[in-house]
Length: 178
Image (cartoon, rainbow, N blue to C red; front, side):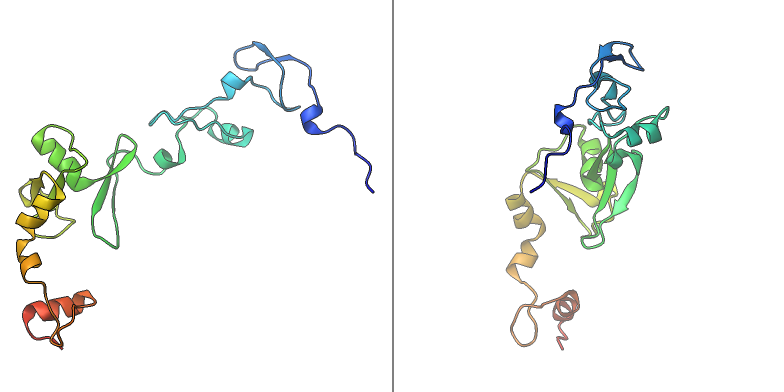
């Protein structure tokens, strides 16, 4: 059977000392703590998120503008393309948003409602030119008007089943199914 070894860390008390930043007297929670809890709080200058972390993080970022990991990598205006869908995202006010929705908001001069759908007329999700975008009030109207042909005449493979992938879908649309 083991014997208890010394005092547990949560039972230790440390002598009060002045904060290295604001000089108020505080009781540290750690023997090497030099700053009070208020001075240890760090907020991202871009999005305002709380990024209070270890002393190592504060030492690394000391004297620099402090930003969170999501804001550090990419500044506002950065673009990225989702490989699977082809949609372009753009960073606006520290948040990643679909570029076609941002473009449509600029066109109509107000924020989009979550139910509103922005349609790409040429069906190319990376073409976000204003003349290629069309706004629908909801998904039902979008499907009825923009995809009416797709709903009435879905492409069918020569053997009567639905196509599994894009190459089969294109072959069925062209009428020369393999």
